[in-house]
Image (cartoon, rainbow, N blue to C red; front, side, top):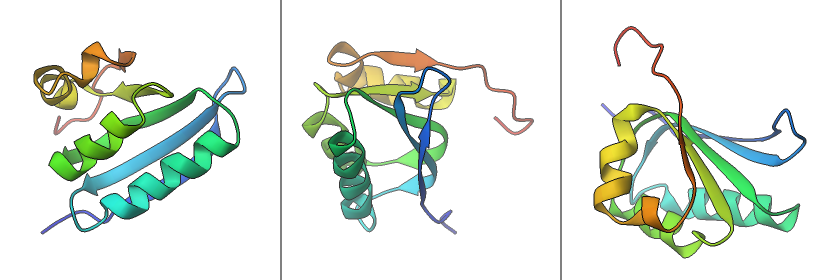
Length: 105
């Protein structure tokens, strides 16, 4: 069973735009993910895409992130680091890894 996608616009402690993403990002909802990133970028760059609560992302999600790699920063838990690195995305944009404090992660 998939976890529904949640997209929330927020501001970081430094006042920068943050898109907080939770759930799973796949081909069925990558359009909404892309639209949320585009909306966040209209309000100010750079945009931090916070994937710390994302349990799964597929090639559709990676395509969206690659399309905006020049204008975003990514925040994630260790779970997604390997896919961001192997795909090459970590070499194109800043990736901040936050500690995984979840009991199941």
